[in-house]
Each structure stands twice: as C-alpha cells, then as structure tokens.
Image 1 (cartoon, rainbow, N blue to C red):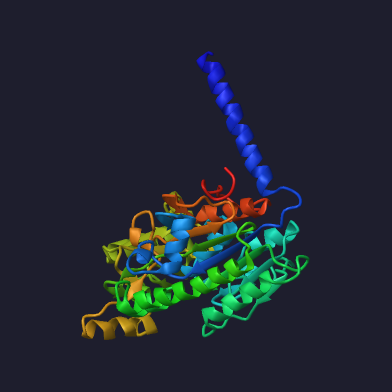
Image 2: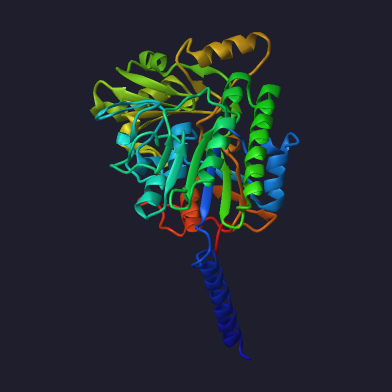
Length: 413
C-alpha cells in the first residue's frame, strides 16, 4: 500500500471514529446532556496542590485537569466571568472592570446587562432550546435582550453559603425532564476574599479552599447518588489567580502630580482615566508615563493590540501597573488592610495583571463526567475557550459573539 493510500485510510478511520463519538454523545433516546459550570473566585492554578483536597483530587484522577486557565485581560472578576460565559474578549463584550463609566451611566456590582454587548452562554442555550439555570453568575440576575434563564437565583447575597448552592443545583437536577436545566452556571466564593485580606500564601486562604473542596465533595456525592454521570459533565474553573501586593498608588494622585485634568477609577492592576479633554489623551498618557516609571499609560486607541482591551468603556487613558504595584483609593478597605497587615509583616492579595506576563494570575480548570476521559491532562488552556467547550458538550452552537474554540479533551474531538 502506498504512503498516500495509507494516510488516506488513516484519515478516513479518524473521521469515522470522530463521527461515531459525536453521534454517541448526541444519540437519540439517550438522556439529554447536562453541564454544570462552577466558578470558584480567585483560585490560583497552583492552590489545589498545596493541601489534601479530596474532591479536587478525585476530579483530576477520574476526569481532567488543566495545568492552568489563562484569563483574558484584565484578570478581574466581572470581565473574567464575562469572557468565560461569552467566549469573547472585553473589547468585544464591553465589561472592562467591576466598575466603569459608560455612555448610559455607571456600571458597578449588581448592574444589569445593559453594558454587555455579547451573548452569554445561558442566553445562547435558551435561544437554542436548552433550559439554563444561573446561581449568582455575574451579570445573570436580569434578562439579556429579553432572554431569561429558565431558573435563576437572585439577587446576589454574599453571605449565602455554598451549601445552599449545592442544595439548589441538586434540586434542579431532580426536576422532571421537561423542566430540568441542561446548563447550570454558579459562582462560588473560592479563595478570593481570604486571598485579598490575608494574601495568597496565608493559612486563611488555604482554609478557604479546603471549605470549598468540602462543598464540592457534597455536590459530587449528590451526583453519584443520582447516577447521573453518563449524561452530566461538571466543569470547575476560576476567574483569576492572586499575587501578594506591593506598593499602592491612587491614580487620582498621579493625575494631579502629572498636571492632568480628569478622574480615575482604581482597579488594582490598572486604572481607567476619563479626561476633562478627551482629545488630549495621547499627551495626557505621555505626562503620566513621565510621572511614574512603574506605570504604563496609554491613550485607549494606542493600547497594545494583544490585550484586546480598547473598548470605549475603558475610558480615555488606561494605566497599567508593573506587578506588584496596585492602584487603590487611599484608605479604601483594601488600602486599610494593606496598611494594617504591614504592621505585623502580613500580606494582602491583588490581581488584574496580564496573565501572559504574570503567571500568578492564572486560574484552574477541572472537568469530570460525560465527554471526559479519566486522567486527562490539558496543559495550559484559555478562558476564552470555555464557552465553546460547554456548547459542544450540550450539542449547541457557541454564543453569537464567541471567539474561542472547544478545548481538546473536553467533549468529542
């Protein structure tokens, strides 16, 4: 047999195997697929290796684990979660920070999806006939362009424990098939609060993840008891990592020192500046660079293209801090913690930096269940690709503005 014929035969066999796998995942008569996507806030890629965490260990053993999950820039909660759910960069989806100014007013925690310019996963699922359920997933508490998830827990309550989330997720799985969600998206506390308050290496941060692991174990046990793994895939991700903070700087003080008229929103690794004279953005950026060597200032239109951040919601000038310098309002809660911790040699944590340059910003991805081979190791994967991977598991098209591709090893390849 010639090499060409051998290659053609191998390609044909590969195609048939892939087709068979796809048909098996979507074969009629089988139970409808279910995907549970859980985000644990602020869990750095290496945190699961620091303690005995039985639930994480089981998922890695029986399913898949990524070396790390690379968030889109900036590695901040709301933009990062929006990239996870839309498969789009912030310059496309428009959620550039936890707090920012838009033409229609200020966006802050708890704001509705008016600033969201890309279709989220739960809306894409509902549009394609798959019921969705959301539990505190950022920007899911109100309808998006008239589309609502079939099941939704709202409003956000930071005090609500993960035990209630586990109870609710299992209750959704127990619904009759006509009402049961095929997609469940839930935000969990992760280790973010402890990481900010005590730093990434503190015992309090490790204890927070142990508590999360215990609740994850309860969820796994609930799925075991219901014998649902043949139809269900569980994905556990995080939005960003954490870094011990260094010096702090109020960007508004930097504006004053540089003689630039405007106002700044401090956002840890970056600051968003709205100028009194937007046409002077390039000159203002030059003055701000000259005023502080640890800060890179860009007129929005001059931002590095690789960051994918040049959206009007980012203001007129964007300031990027060299890690571990952090932008913060003077005597904000974070700044108070920073000053207090310094008195006894403690640390506080910060995030938001470019994860390509600062590995501590990288998060986690674990997967278990349908479409996941035991012991799979995924290497470094992108948060941008999570939405497309979930869509493939569900057998639907990715969200309308999706820019990602399904992750090899999750679902049919």
